[in-house]
Structures are given as C-alpha cells and as structure tokens.
Amino acid sequence: MANPNDPHAYRWRLHNPGRALSKALHHFEERVLALMSEAGHAQTRRSHVNLTRHLDLEGTRITELAKRAAMTNAAMSELIDQCTALGLVERVPDPSDKRVRIVRFTAAGLRWLDAFGRAVAEAEAEMAQEIGERRLSGLVSDLERYTAAMEPGEA
Image (cartoon, rainbow, N blue to C red; front, side, top):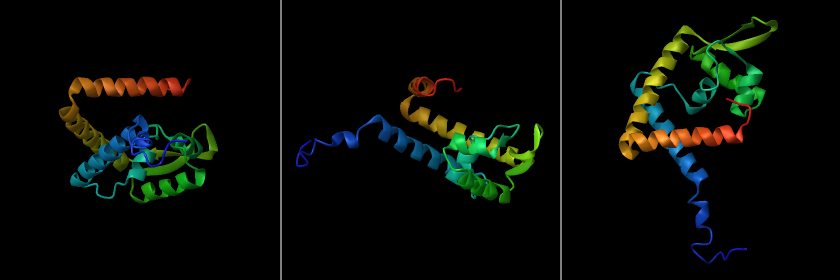
C-alpha cells in the first residue's frame, strides 16, 4: 500500500488519461451547449445530446438506443419523452415489425441537429486554435483507434 502521507503516492488519481479525457469532454460539451444556447436552443441538455448522438437518422429502436448509451430502457424512455416534448424526436412504428416502435428525428429535430453540428464544429475550431490543428487531428485519430481496439466488431 502506498504511503498516504506521501503527497506523490496517489498523484496518479489526478494525472491519468481517463481523468484528462473526462475533463476535456466536460469542457467541450459545456462549450457546445453554450453555443447551442446562443443559437436559440437553450433547452438543450447534456442528456439530450446523449440520446441524439446514438440515434440513427432513419430511426433506432429504444432498446438499441439504451444499449448504445449504456442506460436502462426505462431511463432511455424518460429521455425520449423529454426530447419528444421538445419536438426533437418522435416514436413511430418500426417498418420491419409494427409491434415495435422506433425513435427518429422530427423535421425540427433535424434542424436542431444541423445547429448542433455547427456548434460542434465551432467548439472543434476553438480546440484546434488552442492545441493546434495537427495535434487535434492526431488526438481524434488516436482515440478512434483506441476505441476500435476496445470494441472489436463495432464501427
């Protein structure tokens, strides 16, 4: 066991890739949400982004959305209810099985998605200005490579 009186013994807790990624994600998403608010989408919450980042344009079953977002079906259904109330998504019958419902973007949801894309692009440009375009590109590439290695068979 490390010596708890040694100030460097547990330094790793504050200085590791997971913590750096978590903090960077928090700052990036906060910036995107601020830009969305400036663009007239002040109702957008981080949880809404968690739904929309996993939603296929042609629609996705609730169980698949929950799986992708690492949430329970009940929690995902609640999130879908929130986004439905905002007019971003709707539930419709699955064309392949009318007993099942899928969630898809509404026309307003697609406009929201376009605004979200612009906010992400602006936040990315700000990040590139801070760390450099080449470093940002390399970072994204390295993270995608790492993710692919950790999730074999998923794209």
